[in-house]
Length: 202
Image 1 (cartoon, rainbow, N blue to C red):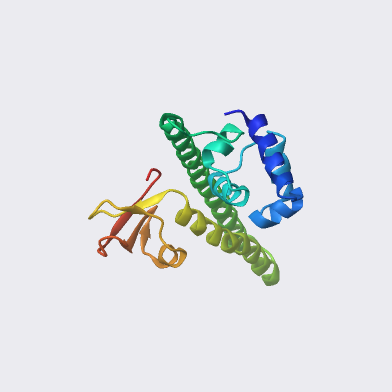
Image 2 (tube, rainbow, N blue to C red; image 1 turned 135 degrees about the horizontal axis):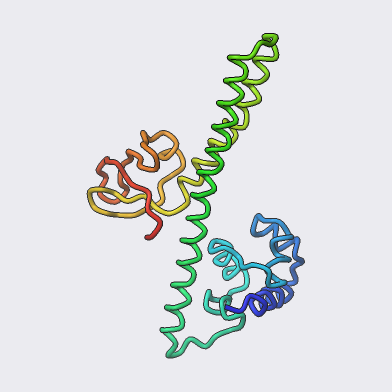
C-alpha cells in the first residue's frame, strides 16, 4: 500500500466534504494531529477509523486502501487481498495492545509493591507512610480500567463449547472470574458458561 497516495486521497475527500482537519478529527473523536499524519503519509488510520472514513466519504475500503476510486468489476481477488490486509492490521494492533497491557501492568505493580515495601520497612512519620502507599495505589487504580478495556476489545474470546469467537461487553469482562486472559463467561451463541480463552484471530 502506498501511504503517501492514501494520505493525499484522504485529504482530497476531506476537502470535497468541506471539512477542516479539526472538523474531521472531531467527527472521528481523535486529534487533528492524527489526521495530519494520515494526510502526510506518515501512518495509516486503524481499522475502526478506516470504516468511519469510508462512511463519511461514501467510499469503499478498497478505494481507501488504493488511494483512488476503484472499479471493482472482475476484481474480487484484489478485494480479497485488501480485506486480508485490513484483518492483518487489526491483528497487529491487537497484539500491540495486549503487549502494552502487560507492560503497563508490570510497571504499575512493581511501583506499587516497591512503595508499599518502603512504607512498611522504612522508618518515617505515619503521614509519610500513608502518602507513599497512596502514591503507589493511585496509578494502579487508574491502570486497571484501561487494562480491562484492552482485554475486552483486543482480539476475541473463544467459547470452549461451541468455539464461537466474540467480543464481550465491558461489564462481563470486568466482573468475570479470570485466570490470566481466560475468563469465565456466558457464550452469546450457545449460552453456556465456561472458561473462555483470549485469541487474536476471528
